Image (cartoon, rainbow, N blue to C red):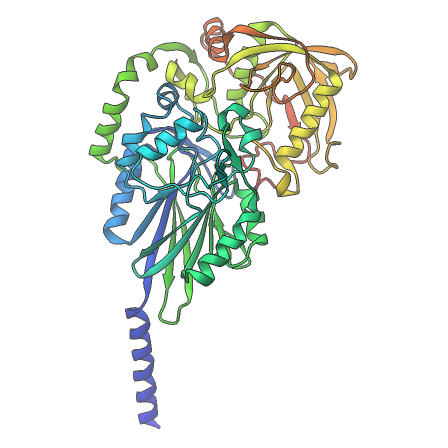
Length: 522
C-alpha cells in the first residue's frame, strides 16, 4: 500500500512537471481610441462599482504607455495591437492630416492594427498613405476598394508567439459611410458581420490556429452581441465606445473586453495553454496614472520634437474656465453644454445642437488654450442655420435616443446623445422605441409640433443643403462665413472666466443621474 502511494505521488509530480514544462503563455496587449493624444493629460477615473465616485489625475501619453509596454516585454511574450481611432481627435493630428502620428506610432513597435471609424477623416487617399508609411500592418475583413472590389487590407494575420499560434481577425465599423460625413470614406465599401464566420472557420479548421482573436472597432454593446452570434471565437477585443471593462464580459466561451481611451489605459489579456491543450485567460485593465508609472524618456523627447512646430500656435490662450468641464456622460455634459451655448449665442437662433462626441479628456479649471479647442471640437466645420418644425425636432431626438439606448445592439448607432441649447426634455429609456419623450420644451415653453423653430448646427461635408445634423428636410438653410471654433472663441471671450453651465437639459427619468456607459448603464 505504501509503495502505491509513493508511485501515485511520483506520477502526480511527473504530470505536474510535464504540464509546467509544456505550458505556453502570451499576453495580448492593446490600446484603443487614442484620438491623437500623445502627451499626458488630465483624466477622470471612477469606480467600476460606483461611477459617481471620481478622481481627477494626470495620466496617459504614449511615453507612459511605452514605459509600461517595455516592462511587459522584458518579462512576457507580448503581441501589441492598436484597435483604431488613432489619428483623429487632437489639434496635432488635425493640423497635419494625421502625419504627425507616423513617427510616434512607429516608435511604439506595434505588431498590427485595425482602422477605426475616424481613420478616414482626412479622406481615403490620405489614410492609405498613412497606412503605407507606418511600420506595422493593418487588417480588416470588411473594407473593400469600390473601384476593384478587392479587400483594402488582409482580413486576418497569423502570429506565432511563444509557441502559441494566434489567428487575429480584424473587423471595423460597417456604419462609417453614415456615421461620418459621406465624403470621408469615398471609394471604400464597408461590409457587415456576415463576412466573419467564414474567416473564423478558415483560421480554426484550415490554418489550425490555437486561438482565434477577433479585433473589432464596433463598440462594446455590439461586440457582446456579436460574440453570441459567432462560433469558435476565443477572445473578442473591442473598441470604439471607450468603455472601461475591469472584468471581461463572457458570452459562452468568448471573452469580450474594451480598454478605455485616450492612451489613459492599456488592456492586457493573458493566454495560457497547458500540456493538455486547455486555454486559460486572465484580463487586466491597466490605468496609466502618473502616480503609478513613469514616462519613457526617449519617447517623451520624440513626441516633443515632432509636435514642436505646432506648439506656439496651440498654446495661444483663448479663454478661462472657473470650473472643470467634463464630457464623460452619455446623456449630457458640462463641456458640451458650453459648446451648444456657444453655437446658439453666435447666431441668435432659438436652439442649437452640438454633436454627441465621446472623445475629449477633462478640461480642468484655469486657462483654455487653442489646443483644448481642437480636443473638445475636433471636427471644425462651418456653422449652418435653418428652420425645422417642432415635430421634426422631436422625431429627431426620439430616433437619437433609440440610436444610443436601443435594447437591440444591432440598432445602436453613432456616439452619445446630441447636446442641445434652448431645448430641454424628459424621457424614459424603458418606454417603447420612438415613444420615450414625455415632456419637451423650447426655451422654457412647451414645444409646438407645427411651429417652425430656428436652429444652428455644424455643416457636415457631403450632406444635402436641407440636412442639419442628420435632420432632413430643413428649410431656409444657410452656411455662415465662420466655423464652430470661432463660435467658441467668441463665446469664451464674452464669458471670461467661464462659469458652470446650466444642466438638466436632458433627463432620463428611469436611469441614474450619471450614465457613463451605454453598456453598463443600469
